[in-house]
Length: 103
Image (cartoon, helix red, strand yellow):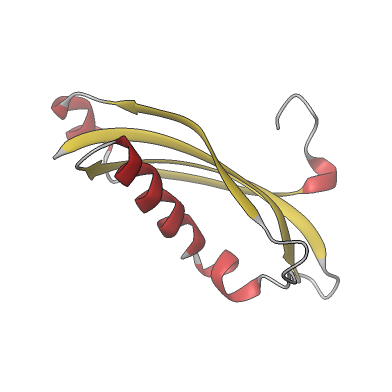
């Protein structure tokens, strides 16, 4: 299996975290193993949607679904993977707090 570093960006996640539903976006960086790039992207997207805050709190209807898109993917060497594969960087922000340069 190959080793990958993946960055995903999520947007349009309608969450009720503090009593008032608001739209949130997220950034996720993680390392994982997969047979190819397509499987790495699919696995990372599934794993992102399994994050408890996103899995349990999404209030979107079918006409306005949340979106997850691939920002970056690259194969990494085994040493870098061994050092960082347990690291996961996840940042959730209200969409009104995201500047256009960050998106």
